Image (cartoon, rainbow, N blue to C red):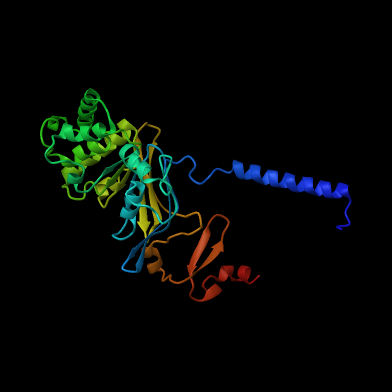
Length: 331
């Protein structure tokens, strides 16, 4: 016996149902993380096991890339940027977390679906262009090959191959073995009209002039074909000309440089670049080593919430470092 009348119990049950319904509706109105993004990585983890030793390449990485955006991924050797690109291209499978590209959930794809994903939804440009090309085929034949494997008709293949080679600035190579290999490789990568183009150090082995030509081809694919482009690079010439440059450190995104075009009253345009630290969904923030080293920060820091910012101090002598705030903390 509860000591409550039937009416009271009914009202409580109704209230409980109403509360549950309100919570359900509220949850339904909250958009999922990266719901509208073209590329989404949420708490992405990749662990490799070699001879019984575990190597954590990605440690809860978060990343959002909008449709049609062109971004560069930079980071020191071993930071996890190549692992990230291999996952986004469908060549590797993450250990945990969420990775979604053009609507495809990369953790749940079957072998057949993964093959279709690599063939139709993403294009990949390797650093060694020969991995995109067959050396005994002409440039046009190389570009036609992915379309042929997908079942496109001969005339449609020839027309599109010619258009793509012209767009890449190597139309003159159509009927001969490709010499400008990297630009031809980009044409091959976008032959089947993928939604996403991924490039791994596409200018890493090229001189300055050739690098500029290759980047112009990548930019052409991004702007003219509307393909979302993600480029892993060490080349500052590339990193400084994309919409965003995303830094990766220790398996997580650590910083972003965002570039915006501003127009003054006279109509003149200028590009403004601003650097940000990345605050992930768990509230983690990677402070630049140059900053923490200069201030002697290690192991732990002290935080204080100010009206318009968060203060961060090295843990040296407690509140004595900032006597103006000591009384407030003591209170």
